[in-house]
Image 1 (cartoon, rainbow, N blue to C red):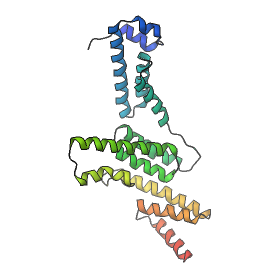
Image 2: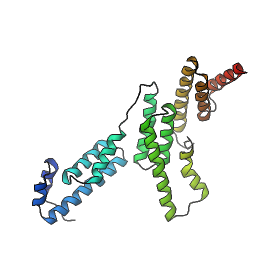
Image 3: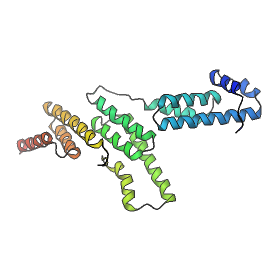
Image 4: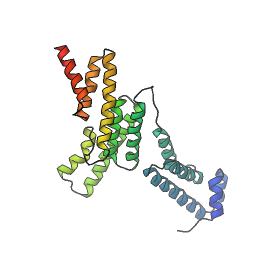
Length: 237
């Protein structure tokens, strides 16, 4: 590929690009500028897939410095700003919910959509109405469907493999082989158990029961949740 003059390119990256400057360059230089802008954008996409967000942001800004109307870079920067964690209301579960959200985003950026969905589902167990988590869970589900559809065009997928790809969309589940799965399950189960206790003490029995049932779905051996459910059941009888 022919190289654009390095001094000219550096000036474009550090100075505002005016319409007059663009008009003054030759067709060959404009082509080279466009190529450089696309290269910056693609480099930003690579950094994004690695969750190196500051570097991705820098590359996309460079792309816009070269081509102010380059829509892919503008859209990427806008979407990046939407990823920043926002808590709509104070919650004792916000820290843990955020951890699951951020792990989900790391998987989302890397194209690991079923794993991303799993983490977003965990976050939603703690923060059920969080719009940001809901938004990226839906985007992950859509991307997972598109990816599966695209793979289906090039290869025949057995029903067993197809079911595995869709399993994370259907229910909260993480592969047993995942070394962090057990620790994460215990963490979220304990959070939900404490949330159930709080609801119980507030007199919101139905909500407490629902939360403890979720605990047992995640951690079937959680004895405290099981005993509390048995206690509520015996009182109601």
